[in-house]
Length: 608
Image (tube, rainbow, N blue to C red; front, side, top):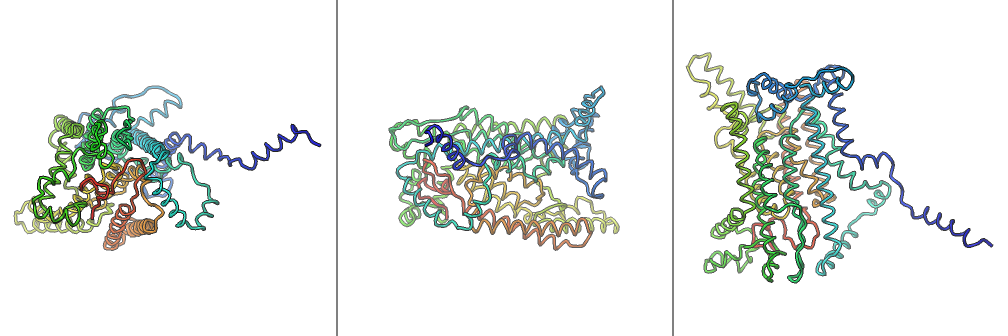
């Protein structure tokens, strides 16, 4: 008989071979652990190789890889290097500090020989220096996205480790319902296909995403000018990690390295820089103010030792709710009638006095909380200071071209918007009218012709702002205090979809925010799958029709316009699917549904 010592190794080997997890491949582990370095290296290689192959005609002659805007940047930088204004370059409509920053290598020349000197001189040339900075900024954006997603997973795991007694039966019911809904075929597919790790998924959202890689390597300054300040702003606002006690006897616990008011000041400075650089982040102002106001008021509530304040801290986190204000108008007929029937749990559409009361409530929340006021003052102050410096050094043209132009920008080239054909026809009619007037000799001025046949056409040109304002107000006050990243994503998505000018660079404005709220979206629902399919079909239709117009020279203007209408409908349908299928994170905080910021702060508050 064998001794026990001889049998022990065999049992160990059997147990290890039976229950050992499959080891990851070396390449996958490398992609997970060094995602920032690999993403940056891929960008730098493509930045250097593809322009040499395509711009110089070695590959795909007639197709240029470098974006035309990059030529505008470099020309403006050369103007600054020679002591001229960057706005001497036609179509330069950006902040002058960008051109000043790109002109730095022109002021310092290197001397030397060797391979390292050749590499440094090529990187510091106007052909590659801007792209080099844009690629670094884009890779940093991807690193911030991965870091924020890692922090979200850590906070959600810490919150779900000790669920409350009231949430345990709800979680069991939800788990049972999910298990019943799962399909056996999907289970088999998941067994065959290994699921990627969380780190790899974080990198796939941006660092390994081909769209931002293509945009930054072509010479777009979006990552450096606006995406980086926006992501740092989101990181500062979400730095407030809160744990609210389940009873008034427990002491609250706050996690955070910076105080709320200091973060509000830093966020305001970054937000002002982003507004000066690109203007569109101004739509985030009310959302960030609401987020800071709720954080500070929630901190005040949790430090008070009373049952009412602790109850409000768990429900909404506000010092004052709409129900407190409605007590003043208890004798009002419309408010008393609505409270009897509906309990005032939704937006008071049919009651103007309640709407005015709600407006007064939000004015108190936003403008009488110190952190939100500090953020607003520093945002406006930073933007005004940078604009003043631009006008001081380069004249009124810096204000007209760098800021005011974007309020009335109309462009029909490479435009995904449904309004591009309208803009195209209006500009054609304006040029025809101007030529006719000059031939006849009526003495009409060019300004009169442009005013008469302007693409904006007065009031009709501002109609697209109406749905944007509605969505902006709903998301800023109804969603942003409870989930700021989802609110910013919805605002940017709606702004790009309804805008009169929509280019491929605009897609990065909301794609950088999507990974931060992706875990609260029902990606596997039937409606979401159909909406994404509809979106991809509309994009393919638009690209095919635009190819026939731009490359083949066909007169397919109406086909491109119909494809733009289809793309617009697909975007609106996708936004509706995201909001309807939005599911909140399961935490110890009792949070109301999206839109609860409008209502009384109760748990049953919904927006009809």
